[in-house]
Length: 411
Image (cartoon, rainbow, N blue to C red; front, side, top):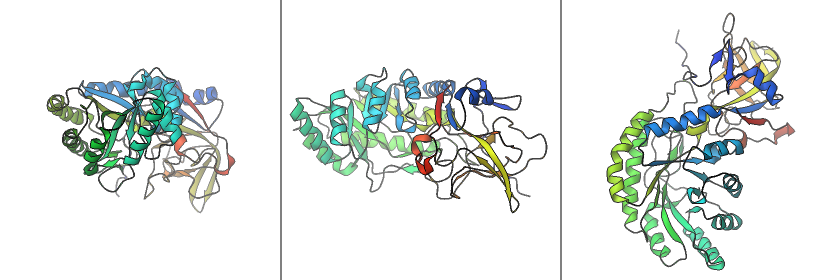
């Protein structure tokens, strides 16, 4: 009989007396403290440890920025404001969140292909760096600058002529709505000389959610080479070089964690030439899910247990309206299970039995765990979905069928 492929082991949340510990307390106690289920919980210790691990592995020249679209919960952003070197936002709402922190406006950048007039005015007034995504957007920024007597800082977001191989989501390398095609950037830079804007640097982002160190290293080499070619046309020295990120976390059976040490060693080898070629530049790695994804859990409670034609279903009070990604309806082509456990009774007392965890919605898509080792769960038990710290609540259709929005806590 074939041995089933397993998820990467959970090395983050300890189990004491067969109960998961989150934020240093038993899960059942945390559920009482929150006031009920469903809820998301993010462990501040794990977030801090992840940043520290990155600091230790990456060269000292690298500045860490957090892309808050991964998890914009204000408490999480506030916590990270004291740990990272900058933020990247993708909307006026996210900009408001980060401006409420201690982060300096000069360390905040704004990316996104469809910034509204209001958002551009907000960004210019705040004094942050705007990543321009098209020649037309540059003209809009210049018009606002002329009307307001300001000189905004802009970086060119480049759609590179290469892709991040093996990435879960390709953000560059072909026709994309993101950034300006690399071959068109020299003309944009030449035109920029006549506009009331201050050239700040480049943002070159080729892909995300990658577990292959070799692919990330190749993309970083290509990114620096592309930046060198483009810098020859720049109207001023490069002061910001955002190398993107792409660091992934294991979600599904058979996936292994990224070899961060290998990526760090390779990047360290690239830095001497990079410092020589960009003497005034701040080198940035921008990460989202890698900082917070593994620090979060989604917790729902079993409200019914039923059997249908030989299959056991655990019906919970949470589902795809809270955690679209775990249901398989956010970026998956073939549905695969996130790691899921019975949080208050992690290991069964006897035989390991199969069951599917489903939500309360009137759709077969509302599936949190399909035929997993959850059959020992009983009504009232807590079902935990790991890897839930990124692209969870805010990436989900919370208004679907009118159920309450879950609580989020940082513990």
